[in-house]
Image (tube, rainbow over all chains, first blue to last red; front, side):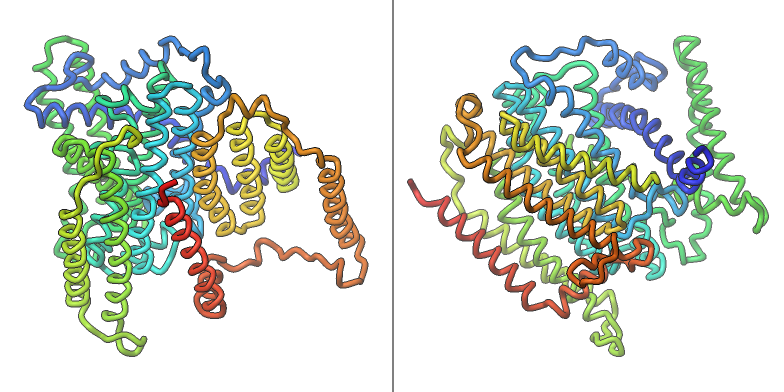
Length: 445
Length: 172
């Protein structure tokens, strides 16, 4: 019996380990994304942001998590308790489950699925159940309105996001996440350069899908208090936040895989850029050095120690990234390079994408709900359909004549189809301008 | 052995939640049990290595039930619905019919396992490991062999959608 148990679990040990790492690290990561968001917001508004807990607020996420853990978990008397309990868990589970098919590097992936891309899209869209059920179970009008808005928004923008994903799938010819990255390595080009419009469509649609500003209608504070999570408190509230940030990481990873070559270094085939292999190590050393430089300037002894610890951690990471780089070829250490450096580049790209999210949030004012719907249905969906045709024509034009194509250069084909798509988009935008805004009625939510 | 355990787990989940869909008094609870029933079915697909079928099941029904939720919340007065009679008077007949159909399915599977040579009872499962990557195969057959039926089906869906929009826009 035990033997059988071992035999059954043997091939699954490594995936289980990866899954445990993701489940343990993700809440921490989400907490630090929140800190990053507050710091970036503060920077853009010429403030300092959190500075009290830890040096430069570095321990703020941990303090927040502790506070939320020990807060009272209030359940409204007239709520549907069973669903009220379950809804936030559903959101978090869906977000974390979607991570199973993400390749964080050539090695670090829980499950390689033949339909990995569809898996991520399908499972992560299940998170909306948590939002709608939570909003309904709260038995409050604000919550219900937030939940309804959320479902309407998801239904409207999922089509556009799906069409944008299709443009990368046409170029890659596979639905496997790993396969998409490997094809970008083979073709020596990121799909961003072949389908730039597809990427921007995905960017807008993914912001709308994760309910982020400027499309954060489901939780618009000035209108709905806090939308679907008005009645939530304590750790259940925190779970909704965890789900939101998990979803952000998932869509950022998906964009990285689809359009930015996943774990690949920028231009992996250009030997003149081989010095970029030293960048991960140098970046970590730089952060370590800066932390060490700032450590004596901290006001309290414990903050000095934390800063020094951060410096030490970054130094260790730098060593871990440097050792495989300098190890002689063929050794075990050198064979770890693709995995470690792949993970670094992947996370760096995800981080840049997330930064764009934050940047847009603090730059653009919130949309009105009818504007949101109009943008989705009258602009993004038609443009994304035109874009799918454009990408298909790009593939046809740039394919060699032996394979039934036209044999154009790739750059010319991409330029032509992009210009045509942009013209179509401009025509649509201009057409939309002349339509009068609908009169505000009491029914319009 | 663990395959058997996972199968009975998903199968049991599907059956129990399917029964609860019908018996739950609250329409939102029914919808939730419908989700679990469909997800359990998807789990059985995954166990059989039919990954494409699994994810299509999830994607389609997530979207579908999402709309169902919205309908339930916006159109059904749950307080009134909870006081109404839950079942039609014909429910014993429906139960009988369901039992007959499940008996038929059981008989086919049972006799197939006994090895009766009648081709009616020949149910042979393909070994899961021998299957090719199925999403490519489905895509190829949809866009080559079954191109016309596929396009006709999508045009019919489009017509249905446009019809629904036109009817919904009419001032009542």
